[in-house]
Image (cartoon, rainbow, N blue to C red):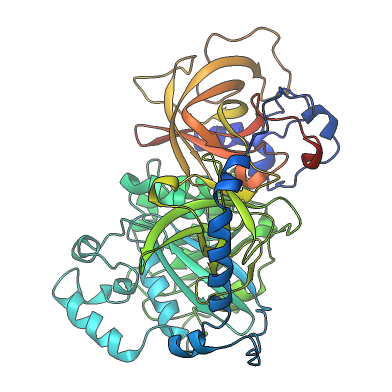
Amino acid sequence: MSDAEAQAAVEEVEEEVPADAPAVGDIIEGEGEASSSHEEEDKKVDGGDDGAGKAAEESSAKESETSDNNDEESEGSSETKEASAAVSSAAPAKPEEPEETRDHLSLVFIGHVDAGKSTLAGQILFLTGQVDERTIEKYQEEAAGKAGTSWYLAFIMDTNEEERTKGKTVEVGRAHFETPKRRFTILDAPGHKNYVPNMIGGASQADVGVLVISARKGEFETGFEKGGQTREHAMLAKTLGVNQLVILINKMDDKTVEWSQTRYDEIVGKLNPFLRQSGFRPRDVTFLPASAYAAAFIKEKPAPGVCRFYDGPPLLQILEDIPLPRRNAEAPLRIPILDRMKDAGKLIIQGKVESGSVRINQKVMLMPGKKVGKVTFLGTDLKEVRVARPGENIRISISGLNDDHVRSGFVICDEEKAITPVPQFEAQIAVIDLLPHKPILSPGYGAVFHCHTIVEECSIKLLLHEVDRKTGAVAKKKPAFVKKNSMVACRIEVAQPVCIETFKDFPQLGRFTLRDEGKTIAVGTVTRLPQARPKTDQASA
């Protein structure tokens, strides 16, 4: 199947039962808004029992008192530890730090292996003052004895020994920088095909994608050909909700390129049709030439005459001006958990606020475990805060939780508007490709389900009906199987209950991909949760 056909299949997926459910094509086309015109249909889903966390609420009453005391200490975290302990109720309170007004964006750096993603991230951190000259000199010496002298900037992001020795990113690197207008989190995704699951985890946390392309002769072609990660990364990013994409054509100063406009135009000409087929609208894609190693068009423009054909802004200015994604601070709280760690004996949970807001002393529930507790600590990437809103990458502590209660893919939510874990669900999928030795998809087909931070084994339980990708007609007969380039409504069963939502209600928690043996075989949207509670007034439930 040609790339054009495969991507066309993704674009043209039609709606699944119920008739108002959003199509996969809506995701790929960037129509990530939840429709409110069919709420009555969703109220017809099968009922389940409410019972979410009442007993746990009682059991955590005592911890709440301790949590309140901890909150008072956290307000004075800028004081010394001794001074904080000595403050009496009669003492004047220290004025609170003004609330941060700059917007926050999470950036995922994606692209084929050796495109220069880690070098770009390291250069940005250096140019924005996050790394000093002395540290850079240390990395230069270390790189000379390992991957090579030109890798020293990548060492800022690639912190473990394996990554530095081999010169390849394995885990998603994480760093932070600020500009006068905005705050940013960098998520440096690995480019090797063996680590695509790690890349998916990074992209699921991102608002904006920076697709790094190597302009060097031969390297662009390798990444863009079938099997290269340029294509898969761009498609996965779009499926995971990244609608804004910056295409940084790197290594323009390489001796095989030498800032050639012909080479730049050739790459842009090949990428544009592919990105349109992947669902990126022209207005959502920005191209620029650059050299991450030489810092050309990163923070500032190079010297006059270096690049005569591009007169646009450098990367950091583009990122400052890029439109913000739409966020709803009034929606029910949803924080998919990315990771957990211990800090001075305290359990710290990492995640991104996808909807709603969270604040100190707020009572929340962790699903699917139905553990209830109060927020005792809350911090963004750089500092402790009192409240976090949608789009923020946060660190959070909740009273009454231990390591056994928390794992990646769980969701922190409102106690009274909790997400419901489900063992199976109905979905609309576009079958992009299948393995040569498994050329058909039928009931019983096993794959790995990726949705927000969830990674779970799954199987196709039932094929409901096939959709003609050209006419949109729904076949009346249930298919026994489908092949690649097909669109089908199906029921999927997961090995363990997962915390997901319908795409219509929560787009961020309703998009997913299916992978098999290291290959992306399908993308889809959740259309119905058969085990979900009816959407009734939570207070009266």
